[in-house]
Amino acid sequence: MIDVSNLSVNFGPAQAVRDASLTIAPGARIGIVGESGSGKSMLGLALMGMSPDAAQVTGSLTVDGTQMAGASERDWRRLRARRIAMIFQEPMAALNPLRRVGDTVAEPLRVHEGLGREAALDRALALFKEVGLPDPAARLRQFPHEISGGQRQRVLIALALACNPGLLIADEPTTALDANVALRITELLTDLSVKRQMALMFISHDLTAVARATTEIMVMYGGTVVERGPTAEVLNAPRHPYTKGLLAARPRPEGLRQSGTRRRLPTIPGTVPPLDKLPPGCRFAGRCPVELPQCATERPPVVANAACHLLAQGGAA
Image 1 (tube, rainbow, N blue to C red):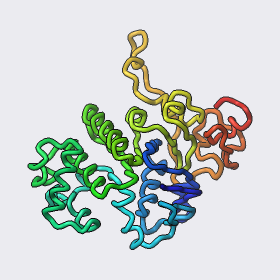
Image 2 (image 1 turned 90 degrees about the vertical axis):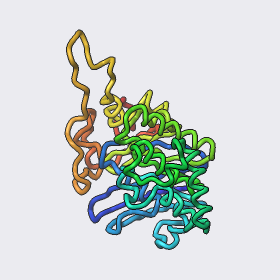
Image 3 (image 1 turned 180 degrees about the vertical axis):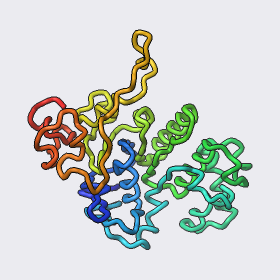
Image 4 (image 1 turned 135 degrees about the vertical axis):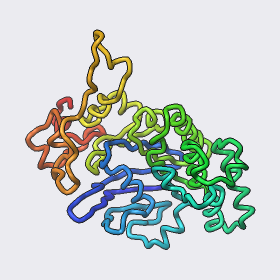
């Protein structure tokens, strides 16, 4: 369905995404994880043809065999909603506060499917039922501020599903939701992907949610994919030092106290450099606990789905 090869998103000397390559087949569920600023959302926007105007996008991006890298906005509009849809971060900001949520979900059905208002609202009602909104008929008439955060997220999911896309990109879909609501949203997205045979790209900081929702995972740092593979394999036996650092930093209630004393969570040393100050070699150079002399200047080869010089030399990262 979607094939990406050496896709880069640049802002002058700053590389937000560097040479990303992936294939997304129908029904695939792929998790994208990494710290803020790692390029996760920018990759999702590039797949939607929605990179910022100042961005220079290079590489290959084909959708259903059609090359979309460098395509016009008019060509992208034909594709969005129908083939690729996105759930954006912050539901309150993504929804128009002056429009009833039923009209918001009905709009793409009117624009792309040519439905009249009543028919589009009927479809919106069916979508509200599918995503589990309580009292869906009443929700059609409400404004975003009148419903809860979890319900707003379900409205955004219904909006993204309106034209039956082949790929749904969910950008931090559980952010700012409490644990129980986040779990239900994660399960809903997984169920919808299976039921509709719809590919799902799940972008998140929440490794637990990614573990539940996906079968494949890509770990990004500094705009670069540093590790990929089956979700369970990567999370249970990570190979790249950055992946290991992310997993070690996860809160584990049972491990916060040892011998009756509090224990600080492990952290990755240092901070993420600005995009225009990242090392030309391994982007993780300068923060890596097992760094070699060539790491900062030479791009690492990919060994067993992880890009690391130490692994290439037969060592253990």
